[in-house]
Length: 361
Image (cartoon, rainbow, N blue to C red; front, side, top):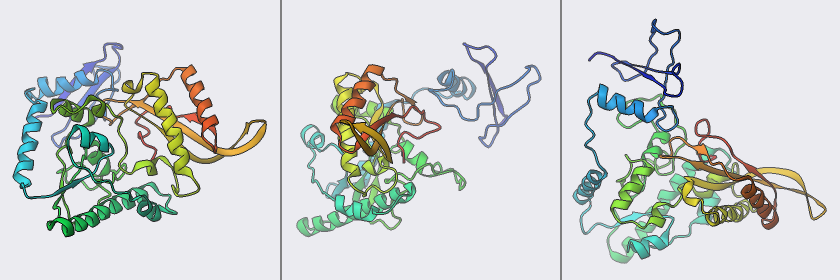
């Protein structure tokens, strides 16, 4: 098959040339074009952040490759239902996890058993500061807790759960390991998501991951087709490792988690009250393990700082920071410093993804 060359002009700047040279092995390479005084190589097309990114991608797929746009989300639902029905029998027990228990019971009519394993997680995380090690510990304990619960359930009902259902998304897979089926061993692991790269190799439960090839915006489309409540669909993503990745360093020291919870609650409620929750892809507070000098009530303080992070995105693969009104930020900073003991400074993260990831660890 011959190599394809795609030249596209940016509408806003005629000198900004999109230049691609697609080799047979799928890699992009630079090729000299003597007709132009310079050329521009786009190594990575970021659909929502590159000028004319979506138009360029459509041009490549539909005009150059001749791909038909016949795919729709209803097909994904039908296909995944068939896979699950062919895998899980009516007699099989299935385990899973979720952060919104009320929605599972009230709206989705699924029985939920809450297990508090906070002490088990924190005891394993004590003294651990390296982000990848923290994620792998959480992934391992995550499965260990499910295995123990499966054993207890077997004693009660006489049958042990065979499957673990996870809401793994495609970004989790991409960031945790090389692309599936690529055969590559040199791809960089951005972070080991607890439900992918953090899982132990000897786990006993079989995985069911019907969403692992979908992005978050596609999952929301799927949920809408299935009649999932809007409040549940629009809920901001929450990291599987929980607040452990929002406290750089040792999460068990002092009362760091309590400080973070209070600051985060004020932040999220403030954006709800301002009517901007649905305009933001994800918002959260980060505990900064740095003591700073301040003055509160005419007294010197030596307290911690909180960083606020809010981003807009379409699929979570790229993101830009949300532009807050200055008056909103001023009031929010005052509230957090006044209402959260141990905090005397509030910072705002104004970094896009890339170069940063959305979560701090």
